[in-house]
Image 1 (cartoon, rainbow, N blue to C red):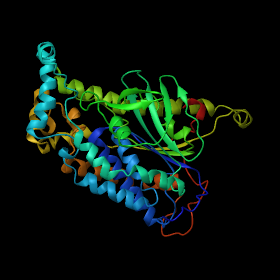
Image 2: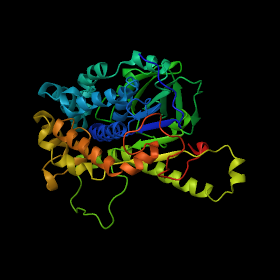
Image 3: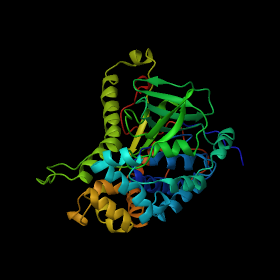
Length: 424
């Protein structure tokens, strides 16, 4: 392994949010960034993201990037290979027996569960069994290599988040080269230590859908689930870990187009309610965090230079890239790609129809780990990022055309007003 060349530019952080199969969009964004990086002659430059943080499926992408931080192009190529050829069976049991053992029992518990629980002690843990994901993570993420790339100078820090069902706390697990003390905020804490597959399993355990995972918090064990739950400040960990500018990749539309949205007078089924709840968990926190940064920085902009110099706050440049299309609508086109037993299970919850007539597509959009869907999301990620090429180049300080040397420092542009560290 060749030691990394020090980067004189600002420390750049990457924040990958959650969203199950929607995280394929993130890979498309990274693919486009890798392409721009090569076109600008930066292929030999150090890892563009010394600080990487992720939540839910974003945590898996983050860890895969981190353990290959010495070769960004190879890291992105590896992620593309996985997401372009995905099948649901790589993430959860999609065969008839597996679905019956988990989903069918879970649905039965909702109806006559008191009888079964009393006489047979049947306690299904989740709608789906995600045991296959553990095997995939064992191949995709080399946890031993994480420490190696950190020691070689390719990576400064990695963080993944989960949520404790016991204490109700949102927990950020992190590992870093620098001596960064754990932080505590209202309803959220940080725990330092080596990050392994169990942390990724917990971070991506969608509530109700996948089972919680036991993790060590201090001197005791707590069962944790998806890190998007109770995540009030998705950008915060990257700031705490030293990022001076941050690229945030969302997994859902940040803004709806102007004008009224089509509604329905039909009573919502369980799938529609579940999809709406998941959207609240996975998407709304990021939008709220971004809006909070805008409000705070609008206030800071009113201060004089002398007043700002007297504070402990510092500006954080942020570039947000999020889907330009509704991923629910894209999922609706690919519902038939799901394995038959899974379609039958979701059909029992109300996922039905196809295209514009589909119902419950929002719920399915998180579980559609099938290549036709993930490839379309990746293509959208590439297109959205290339559409914002000028923004990306200014953010990194890259120049059009082949150049040599390190990225120029101080030539970035903030897509949002500077964010104070104290607010994170």
